[in-house]
Image (cartoon, rainbow, N blue to C red):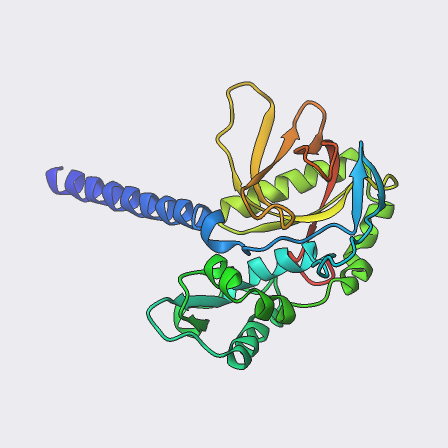
Length: 267
């Protein structure tokens, strides 16, 4: 009986260690993304300016430099691609503009929903510690090589907002969001209030905050390309079965529809 019990105890110990290792790796993957390290250090600007949720065309002041606009989808996609396909070597010599541009395109022309590359197969960016540092120091090179904004208006997946409005769809989106974050993945969401035009915007959701007991509200940390200074917050109300987004100068806050993009082909 003693040998049998020993083998059983050893088996349970090994199983427990395996489960703990899996959970540890899962937790590490889910928390690996850092806002101050892994996001782009410059802002997207809105084409419209908003007053109490009503948009009007923003007037360009005389002598004002050309603004970097219509890139919220582009910046979210770029952030996801760099997280999956790039690595940084701060101790090496930085590349010149031409070589850096080629490496940036090597990353941003890959499918955003593809599997992350192993470290030894990733595109290396020497001279910088992370994406935020590089995008601040070499802003114009980064801007010129991550893609145009206007094609994102015609993405096939955008047309879901015309017909997928029912609450069951958004409950499924909430479930898929939680599942993606639990697997350590990033989730890019298209936020809209269509047919109203108070917001049509892309953000990258990277972390679920600890739930408050019996609150019925799930809170998520968001990288918003319009606000590179700090994370924003998206919430889900189980009672209302709906998402809401944080108020700021370009959105009145409150209810939004969320459609996942860049999670798979044609999404």
